[in-house]
Length: 162
Image (cartoon, rainbow, N blue to C red):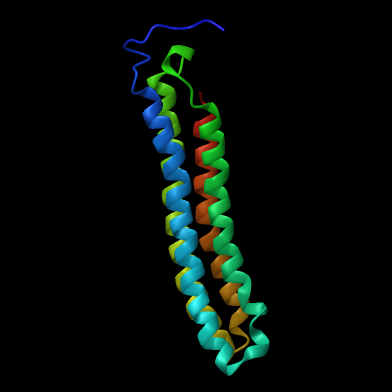
């Protein structure tokens, strides 16, 4: 492996953007997952007072929120594994691609977590009163979850462009 001079295409601060991409991926997607879990959890707690037999059925929004964090974790590990020294040809271009990938999965995970939390909270409370609402809640949760999946797809596409 040949070493490269630090210069215009390989500046010393290039890896900073890659590291920020990895950090953004996990931080923002974990924030979304935490919000989704907390918001859905409060709905489950309120619902379980009236209908304790529905607790296990109502855990679905919490599981879906947790999957959002996995998307960010996957991208963060991919990025962190490929961040290297500028002398080992880690260019500014690679750093920007990694930053973009991290932000894509992170912010879409944050948005998906917010949507899952709000829908999960209202959905489990409503399902306790009207059980036919359950299927509609699951469909809405799937559409909220896919927002995070879109971010994962874009992040992987950006990551592979290096």
